[in-house]
Each structure stands twice: as C-alpha cells, then as structure tokens.
Image (cartoon, rainbow, N blue to C red):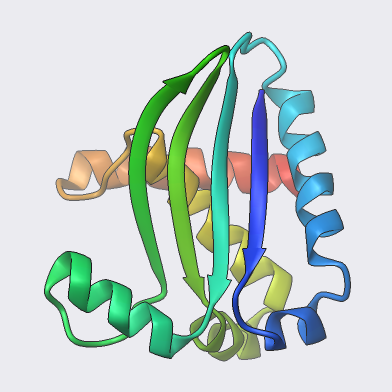
Length: 146
C-alpha cells in the first residue's frame, strides 16, 4: 500500500488542477486497488514546484546548474510499520510545456510515476534497466488511468 503526501510550492499548480491533494488521493486509491497485497505502507512526498527551485535543487544535489523535470531523493527509512521511500520534486513549467502535445494531468502522472519507480529502486542507466522501468511505468500509468 502506498501513501502519497503532496506539497504545493508553486501556486500555478492549483490553477491547472483545482484540488491537487484530492487528485493524488484518487491516484493513491487506484494504485492501492491494484497493489493491495503489500502489507507495509510505503510513503513518499511529491513536491510540486517551479523551474527556479528545481534549478537550485539540481545544482545543490547533482552539481548541474539548470532546471530539470523531476528529481527523486530516495530515503527508504523504516518508521514503525511504514517505509518512507523519499521525496520527488516536479517542475511546473516543464509539465506545462510538455502538456501542449498531450494534457497536463497526463504529463504529471508520467512524472510522478517515474519518480516513484526511482524511489522504489528502478533506474535507467543501462538499456535493459530502461526497458524494465519503461514497461513498469506504462503498466502503472494504464492502471491508474483506466
């Protein structure tokens, strides 16, 4: 079972999705319907921010002085009966720009699912790992949007 915490650090997110916390609660509920066999609660936080903050985080943690679409900060810390997976930060401007060819919520879902998989131990450094992660990402996306 997962629990998604949401922190909105940039007000334009609320203009695109009126009640963003309820939006994530719905996604959390759907996710848990598919993956309800997991006994432990896996919790993580989605920080919805902007390019300026993403640039600062990217520079501080990756030594890259430019904004990026998403950053994942794995933690995997056990707290009582929960496992806190870590944090995901997502850039509003990049989601918004990509949504010109799709939709805002489509791009947001793709990003937070991608970040969740990084927190869960997936990566895409090698081609084989990329393929595994990409398949898992698409599977979860389809289940949450069916």
